[in-house]
Each structure stands twice: as structure tokens, then as C-alpha cells.
View 1: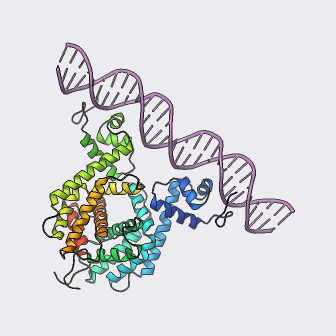
View 2: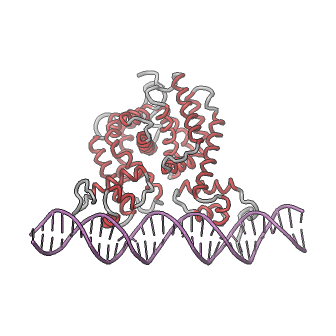
View 3: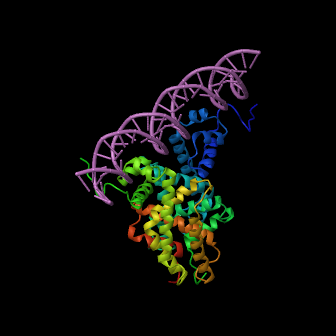
Length: 192
Length: 192
DNA sequence: ACCCAATGAGACATCAATGTCTCATTCGAT
DNA sequence: ATCGAATGAGACATTGATGTCTCATTGGGT
């Protein structure tokens, strides 16, 4: 009586389950394991066989997110060319991971600093280094610290992801809106 | 054997309980009712007598946050003077409510759009109107929509609040960092 | 000095999510 | 065709938070 959409037995695709989980948890962060399982099209028992518990699932999502973010950094080649153009490329490459990133950032704030994944530090360091490089090359202003620019970067990515999801911003404008605000600000500049 | 810090019986100060709850939930959004009660220095039963349940508590916090934000708007006189200066004043006035605002925004994202508090629409409208005014007066660029600028405003406020709480940004720099990034962006402008 | 409203502490039932287990089923590999 | 590994469905116990209740205590108001 059941109907299988595609591939029903033998070896559940772990990555595909993670993507389904990310898609759901991104929209509803409080979704239960049962809901995640249904969203992934598998049984709850099977979900537990692959991920020991909710924590394990979230950590696996963390791994996935970190991997994709590092890949985005690599693709954006953030160490090459003018820093502002590198930021633009980075935002563009990060777009697909933005909702997942937003979820993970919120989730991380709940963790009381006990055991953080090292990946975050590496990513923070890469973003921070990009802004620092921009400052040293005279492209970015020096009165805003790299730490704050990094924080703002994540914040705007998250805001952009939510705005797109809620339909307040068109998906095609995601990169432009974020980059223009992050680099140029809201004030109308005289020149340009 | 017990020691009362101040006022131990008769008529718990509702506002003070809300402030304690806000202070705790801001740091740990998943705190239980029991933890909230302890943080407020009252019994769990008493907490339940004043707020029917967790939902009621969060809604009361929403009311409090909305009231304080509207008060901040009033104090900032966002309809007077140049729009960019009005934004600067607004950020300054909003600073104290920032952590609570951050918590409520996250909490609201979980609600599946069922019953939203009207206050948010009013606040959104005020912020949005400020940015629109700035555009009409030629102070703000017109290629970034007021809706996005509003979203970014909230996002940066939240990022700033977390950055301060985690010690990545000094509390005294809160207003400056947010305003400068929001209005001027990270790019170093030629003039100025 | 008395009374009563409000509190704190704790017992209790309830509920939802979790994690574990069993068992029949189904397909892939041999 | 057969075997076996992995699955789905569901039962079950457990845990943690919630909401309700009782009762002794306290202190302000009269």
C-alpha cells in the first residue's frame, strides 16, 4: 500500500537525510525527531539508527554546514583580488547555505559554550582575515573591528535568509542587498 | 533560615519578574519555568499564578518589549531632523532593549505565523517609515528597499547584542558599530 | 492582636518527546 | 530462488517539563 518516491530500501542516503533535516529545521527549529523522519521520508527508528539522538543529528548538520561553508570560501577565493569583491563573491557562494547557517548560529547560542566545534573558529578566522586584509589594503575602514564586521556578516546573512524565506526580499536580490548594505551602507554617498 | 533580599511577601512585582525572566531567557532561551522562577527569586507556583504558562510569560515579555521599543522610538523622535541622525538616536535608545528584542525575534520565528502581536507591525511600520523618509529626503540610497533596511536593522541590533554579551565588542561601542555599519558600510569612502 | 490574602515548598498527574526494542516486510546480493 | 541486511511500523519505558493542587507560613491591613 505504501508508495516509495525513490529508493526505498537498503542503505539510506545519509546526506540526503541531512538535507531534508536542514530544510525542515531551518523553517521550524523545534521540529521533533518524528517530524524530521517524516520530512526525510524514513521511519523514526531508521533515523535513530543513523543518528544516535537529536544532539547527534544537530552535530551532523553542523559538520555539513561547516563543510559547505568552507567549500563556499574556497570557491569564492577570498584571498584573491580586492577584498570588497571577495566579500561579494563570498556572499554569493554562501547563499545556498544561508538558511542552514542561520539555524546553526541560533542553535549554537543555546549551547552554553561547553563543547564548540573547531570548524566555527576556522570559519570565523577566514572571514575575519578577509576583513582584516581589506583594512590593510585600504579598502575597508579601520574604525570597525574585524570581529564586529564578521559578526555583522553572519547577522546580515541570517537576516537575508529569513527575509527571503518570508518573501520580504526577492531571492534574486539576496546577494545584492546584503553586499551593498554590508559594504556601502544605507547612506547615499555623494560620489559614485 | 531563608533570607529575603528585598520584599518577600505580598504582591510580587510583576514587572520585576518580567525583567528577571528577560535577563535569563536572553542568555538561555530554553530556560525552564523553574529556572525562571528561581532567577526571579520566587516560587514556581507563584510564577504560575501570575503567568498561566510559558506561552503567557513569553507574550507578557512581548508586551514589555514592544512597549519599551515604542518608548525608545518616542524618545528618539525618529520623525524629526535628518533621517541618518534619527537612526543614530534610535539605535542608541534601543540599546537597553536589544537583548530582549533579540530573544523575541528568535522566538517569533518559531511561531508559525498563527497569531502575531499587532505591536510588531506597528514597530516595523515605524522603522520602515524612517528609512522611507530618508530615501525621499535624499539621505538614503533608493536601491535598498525599506523592508530590507528594516530587516537589516533588526539583524544588526541582534548581532550587536550578542557580540556585546560574548565580549567580542565593547558595550560602549554598541551604538557606534551598528550605526556606522548600517549607514556607512564597511567600505572606506573616498571623501569624508 | 487578629485575620486573610499571597506566598513557598512540595506532591501529584499529565503530556510530549525521546530512546530502545521487537517483528514482519522488502529488496539487493549471491 | 534463497538468504540476509536494512527498513517501517509500532509497542514500550523513560525522562523532563508542565500545570494543578494542597498546606503550612508569613506579614500587611484593619
